[in-house]
Length: 331
Image (cartoon, rainbow, N blue to C red; front, side):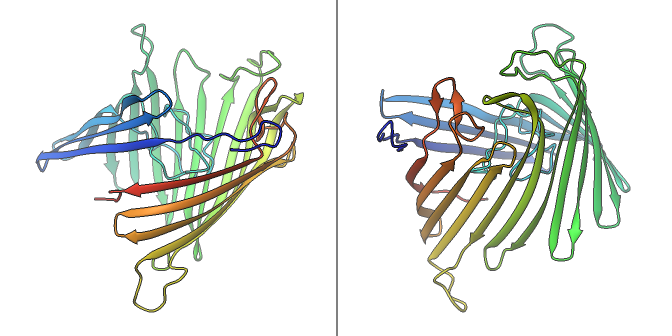
């Protein structure tokens, strides 16, 4: 990493994931994922259970998932304002990465044209009433899916959510909104906004061509709770993101291996005029092995959302990285 004033630093990271997917019979499944992270600075090895749950059903009608699980609640890709249930938010720099979920019971009842879900979260439960209830209903209207949900927790402000996905020609539309009375955030100004109505919403268009490994995405996000350290009176920021990924750059005809993929990502805050641009190249010489090179540039003052990391601390302007992946894939 380099930011001019602070010079350069080397920050290596090593990690591995271990999966287990056991199906003793057709009606019962156990799934687990453990992430191992090694820090060469102090030779420490940490292991974290990311997911560990069981799937089962009652008379092939009501479906249950019990255990630590990632909550499939929202529809956003780069941004997801309604995803308030998982322990980790979407990382726009790696939006398809698995996120750590809470300890929960998912109850699902599929009906004709309607899908009913109820998440019961008991994460960090200290008293009998410390339970989060998150009901959601999904409806089909032609080729479009409309969802509505709520998050009820005595420790949090009540929240309502709307979701919408569907085709627009060769594009896929995605949108979601979160409405809440009050906020659970701690603002830089230290003010209490318990009597204020907050709206956060996003909308985007996605194009994919799996055969050519081409993905195009544009997404807008109004973050109703965002605040810059440089302007404590400005609550609510307009943000956007766009990404491009293209594989098979050097391949033609039926020959599709090895694979070279190029990617470009832009994230920006229109309110404080900050943002970042990330480019990358990934080479897949093996079916389950890849090498990659990335470069990232941030712009904006040290007090804007994409540079500010704390009083007197700014994120570096430039970053470069290399990585290797072995044994990855979807099974």
